[in-house]
Length: 635
Image 1 (cartoon, rainbow, N blue to C red):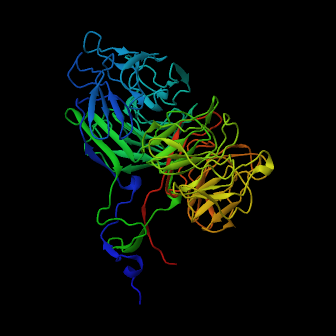
Image 2: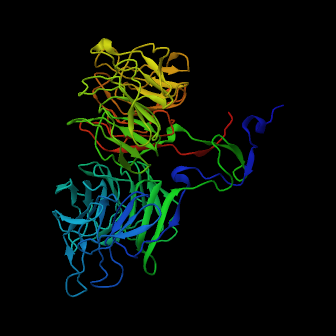
Image 3: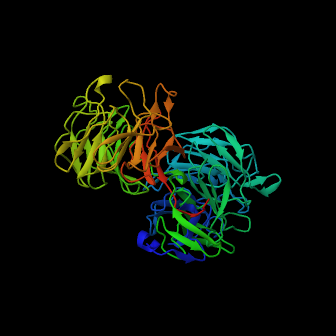
């Protein structure tokens, strides 16, 4: 008789507790390098590899305690850089190279017991601070949301006399605009609590009667709605995440708190506590599993302590996906799984150049976003992603939109597309070696309306597309690239363009897209087994200018636009394929069409960068599926 170990390669272990799941369920706080200067009430922003804190109060009294010190974080150390023009407690939003630091307590009035509230706002460009337009309402201790120095909101706050704190103001890069008020006036709400159009007003202090709150309000870009309350009342929290559907808050007052809570769109869940309880707003990050809390005030003093929140490893054994084990405490057999249905979208770093109809290559943490289009025309820009930020790299030789891409961030190809200067659809094929693009052997036919390809630089594939004008120009082509030459393979059963393509030369999927009718999207899906295409189960919602990731047996298709059926519009929809059927799962935060993805990196981890709805965007969203421990039940 075969033994389980002989089949699966390891024994069924007996463990007293579950291995820690990946994602937020197993995430913990760990110490990182401390700030150079202890302080609280700072402006902060960025990611866990590129962050910033500025201003604040260091406990040295009036007026010297109010500091303009700025420190940037590179993933391993804090570095002091140019000071703000005016030292003060402050609150802000943005990135390590584009931060807004708002009004606050400046400590300049006399006597010292009545420090002044100054309506000063400063903008950081990565090397220097510049004073910019002031708030419409001079208030300190406001909540903030925004992951860009040109798009954010501030809300709530307090005046020296304790005045009304329900105002919301939006920043567009040059001026502030008053928008819908909070339902409840308060100050010292959580900072970095989402984005300009998707935010949470979390906790805070109520001025009359004075008390700390559990109240949470949700912001949709125009108005606030009360939602489920925090588990622990507090103020002066840090925040990280995308707002309405995904947010982490941590620390706070009164009595300084170590509590960490996460919001999943419907409820708050207690997570692992900070190692050092404190308050002070010095938190930042772009997701619920990746955050930093820097400085603050602990139980006895002002502190420079910094901690990072990130997923942890297993507690008792290395965790293997698909591993079966026996939990002796709960008396149950369990298995480690990574169900695609448990995945979520979270905001990532924005592209430097907003665009749509771009194509991609690589993985979620090492990606390329190639060429594309904005209202000014096609773009030659190429950007490389490191998991948190995009960097401009070498431009393509021929700028175009709706081309195909495949490969990695250091070895990729960009083929076909629409190039107005060419003019029109092209067969161009350019090869990327990590530093420059070189024109190599063209595709067999001039083809646009691709959106993406699949595979690697030496084993790539391009499927479907448009080879001539009109409804009859959509193609069934399926061509392979070996790093030098192109070879025609078995064709699709039905022509289509602008579909979601995913996989590689031995296992691929093409889902939905445009059929022969110029504007009609199909729900049909075809699966490639390495030698032939077979029609399989339809998607639930058809569309075109879609993005895909995965392979023939496990895949995602997301975003896109549909016209005329089932209804016109741009989608945030995500569907997963398990080899048998399609299931609608977590939506993108923002619906869009025609952005870049990572076609052959699996259905558990991908991204979407750029796109259009209807104007082009620089936004990036990352799809992540956590590993979980599931009890095996026998019926």
